[in-house]
Image (cartoon, rainbow, N blue to C red; front, top):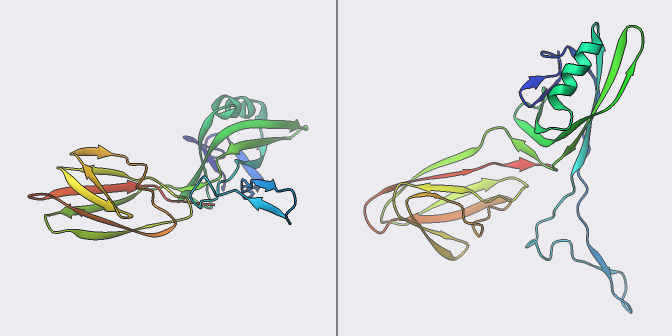
Length: 215
């Protein structure tokens, strides 16, 4: 039976709830407009401080479930698991992505045979890929180039080096020591991103990890 995975438990497999309907709206972009007296229209400053990246508000996901049989027990077990908690949410018809948000039981209606449970989730605007993108590289004294593809959400990767490595990104050179590094200025944008790497001597392994996301 199709349903929703809330954290570690499934709406049907663990609680016997049948998914009746769902609403997955697109998030609203954060638009900043400034009216300038004496000029036509207004100034759109939405991406001025983000370097051109559009930011979005959270969105509200809604799931309507039908409980059959011992719905009173199902309601309490379901509420104990998710009500008020922040968790990952995976839809059965989209198992390669997940949402992140705080879930709440919004309403509960019952009749003699069944009950309706409405769950809302205050979710982040992104659908994250279930698997991180991992790129394994071997750095030598000869500079090499790798192209890192990314989807809609801009992301800072985690770079792990076995030894000291020089990374060049967007014209700026960064000296990375052995271990894990997160450099905010290495921001992978939508599309293809070029990164150059090399060592001063010898060889080193370089692992680049990041999680792609779409709307």
